[in-house]
Image 1 (cartoon, one colour):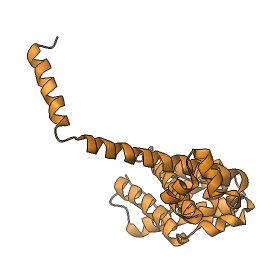
Image 2 (cartoon, rainbow, N blue to C red):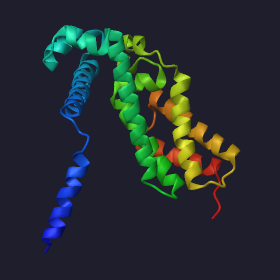
Image 3 (spheres, rainbow, N blue to C red):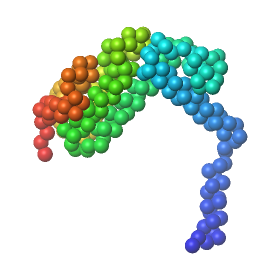
Image 4 (cartoon, rainbow, N blue to C red):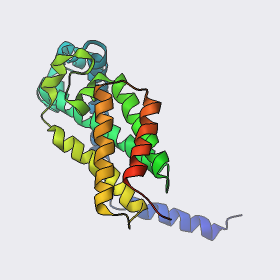
Length: 223
């Protein structure tokens, strides 16, 4: 049971945390949250149109109406339709790589399990998402040629992001691994995954199993 002293100390701690927080600070935080929420809702609406009817069907006025703001407000937040598309690509890419990292981290000390899980995820979601497929392969995902106009980020930059993500995970797990073996494994797995996304001849589960085998053969681990 807490004493009166404990209660007084708790009140002091709460008060200390609030020192220096003004109504201006709170209003600024509220505006920042509102703006971030607006961007997410607008990007969600644009993504829905892209996946359902293609990038060519996206209209700034229709997106603004769906979100519940004026077209001018939407332009003020994103700029042009192309800039809205670029923001969508950046968000889609960030979420994709974040999940790949989560899949790898779920298998500490297990190269085959981690690579299999991450590769199966990569192929599964990319094949089901024309936007993501186009981002990763620079081919018209789902046959939507209009998606190709979205991309200002070079494909090499996205590949390097994937290389770095996998390489950093491997080096964190096995710091003594031969750098040449690590490089060969990482580049082989990432480029083969990209190929399987572009040419879907095997199931995601089979791709995951194959990538695990490639990883273990390229990167022999001892102990």
